[in-house]
Length: 183
Image (tube, rainbow, N blue to C red; front, side, top):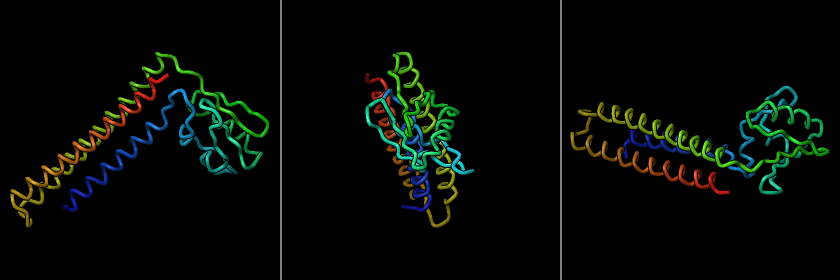
């Protein structure tokens, strides 16, 4: 496989990984510790992910429990969660913080499915941009030890790669949509 195709496949893999991260942050009515991934806590003057300051567990399907290793961090973690766009008020239970996820309404589930589909469409746009850049790169190789047939074969290989990754994006969207709509 040519270097240009390998670079394109690497970019496609990263696009898929980003989509997985984005979809993991969408809460579907059950507790998922990944919703905390983007929240930073002021840990002695340094913005730090919650997972690096506390033990995060899911004792029940709709509850996340956060047990800070340093008990003085309870108020800082509480502040960070309230300031985030999570939309859940934390409950302080002694030295622990609990996040209780409410059941989602049908309307909210449909909104989340729209959000999932939008993130999927963004990933597909990124794949199309990768294809466009890859096509340009491959076409520039013409005449540099590559015949018309080689260029044509490489363009076909690139399209097959794009199709494969677009199918993976569709599968990820379907899985997450079903998860969100499941009561």
